[in-house]
Length: 137
Image 1 (cartoon, rainbow, N blue to C red):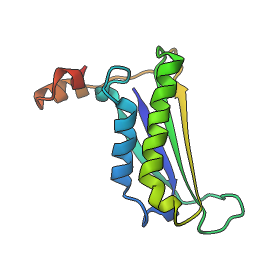
Image 2: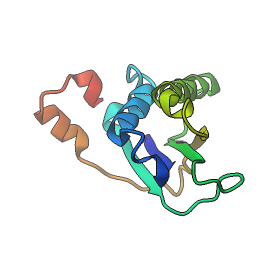
Image 3: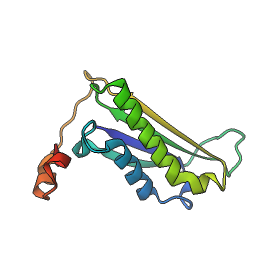
């Protein structure tokens, strides 16, 4: 963990570079890697084809970022990290926001420890690829 979902209205695909948005959001959450591990990050872009935004005008658009994290971080760490994500997404989307109706939201939630099962070998492969130990940890 963290797991990141970037949902966006499909009418934005011509206006945004989705891989750049995903990288900006992930980099902003991970920061220096001391609170959230890079090796745990899984970020996805999810276009939403069916939606109704306020009055239903076809120009209306949205981006919603859901940050799901494991428990154990302080409220201050969570607030700072979510704020970094919001600021990064807002900056990247500023040209779109200047040209059309756009809603941006960022939400962070903690996963249930009891019902959270996971395994991965990402760290092993990151080490094989020669990434610094701080990135792999």
